[in-house]
Length: 447
Image (cartoon, one colour):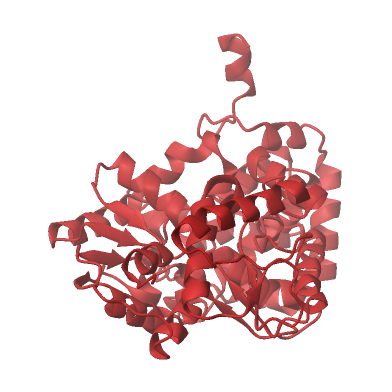
């Protein structure tokens, strides 16, 4: 493509070209846009949408909660209230002009300038859930066929294979057997039980683990083995608990994904689900997916890995003969700490396994987002620089912990790892990043 044509196809707003936005928008007309959004408001918006939107009095108290606003010179357009005004308020205003340029700008705003982290909710005097409003606009963009290309590719993979990384069934089993063989060099009687019926634990993880981080399967198998856990994994689809469709607004596909996940566990007659270290997957399985299917709660008990680690440490089912001796800091992931309240459990695990713990400031439910969540990192390379530069406050927060002596940053979430890795590299912070499972595996007794 010559420079001129590249420039012509570049999004106007930030000089970023995204094929999913541009090509999707090229098929739209103002009539179609208004028809889709009006129908969506009527069918799915209801009182909640209008109440949240109308309750906002633009007081600005949400602004300082948003890392995009703080990192970009306090641009009012990037405040949570500003994003609502530019998107949902215009959709609800029948007289507002909803043309192709509006959809392109709204799409970039809701997909790349809001991480759905819900930090602003706890600062809003009315408790307005801006993440819900941004997801509503994402839903409309999905119905219009205007979604950033990279995250839509992941959603397509999920729709075709029931895992986000296009891992074939035989590749999944090969990876499990490969990791079992590797682990048996260390622990000869270790097994990774596949399709074992009636187990106490159905273990599920996210698609990138067998593809890129197979060592996490190895480590979890060792932890399960040393804890004497009765566990299993399925051979068929249902093992991937991740869910980019939840973030693209494709709730029909989210329902299919969660249905097959729950059915895989119930077909094996497992007593509960233990999920790996991922935040958005936990949100999808514990909160969103079950409700999309019409269930108030998941059909069988489930816990995040943090809760399982705390359980086996309290019950003395694993031994930590020597604690991790490098100073650590802890990043509280939004979906499992602000959303689920696991901050104390995480700190219990850290204090049981690490000798020196340095708190980030702010922390727990007030922690700054990693910048990757909400599917923002999955929007891919076109938006990488924008994403990292929109989280300078996170870099400042991490630098302060490093200056207090922190050498290692623990984050029990895959998306957080992706975002934090980019921030650590871009701002040259020199921190090493680990999962909680990395720490436990390294310190636990394995004989």
